[in-house]
Image (cartoon, rainbow, N blue to C red):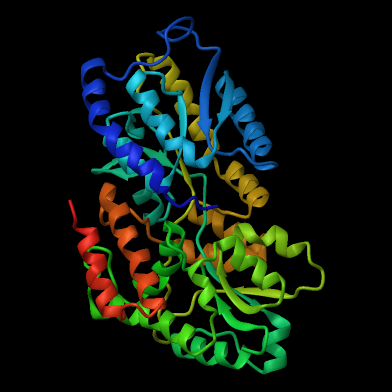
Length: 417
């Protein structure tokens, strides 16, 4: 699942990063001291992630244990809440207590890598072939690969098959078809479509396919292409095809609206599928997010977590951590994790086999091939652009500003110092 960047963590990060860089430069970013921390035989290593929820925590724990056995070590897993992970990592880097194996939400890799806390994966001869370009980009900082994701995710269009059939509406493939379908599907007590347009990075995440697929770019937000994408959302709200409440909805809220029959279509991720499958009376399908013009391929954002090997005075521990990381990225383990979590295996060939076995994941697997890392253009500066985007969405959908005006303000936020 995605874990949109969290403003509180970002503020803490901004305060700590400068001192961490100095600390790392002065100390070489040390690790644990004591038995097994220097050279020699390593019996156990530590791993840190944000998989606190069940059954995710246990499933990842079992996979880490299995990969630890493959590497000949015990993996001691610690999980912290998502909002706490980045501040904890930055503090551990400063105090030289980083874990041996570290999971990061992929947009957060940039700010951790720039502190010098991570080691390039090519030091360990890790095979990075067979991954889509966007997936490798998510784990790369200044040309060096620091993280690999066993699985990734993105978003697509979910639709209620029964509602579309009764209305005689085909699954929309273009923006014009989306507007027409949403209008036709709207009834008293039901909207045609729902998105998450709230004032967080989650709202930005949901808007990106519309921005990117129309040729918009986070490097320059005040463009006609960006304004057209935002105008689409404005038109859906103004026409009554989409509730104005999307300004406050999370992706979980959007899911609840869909399950309750209060929207015929929604933009959401594959992590919703287990809950959808529990409702036997709900007949749903998934399709790629509609594009501006027929024949185009949607460009969607890449979600998911990367695993990294932090700096440590113990090369032996680093080597063991790298072996576990390699095991997590084994094709068979990718497939196991994907089936457990409804994510997409990161190796393209494995994702293709997975889509054949789990047809409901086909749209996601296809979209992942061309999905884009949120940090691919701006690196560690991405959060400012993301803030500008969700601010613009809020202003335009409330009618406070036109899309053009809102995006000019967004560009000012993105380029502010």
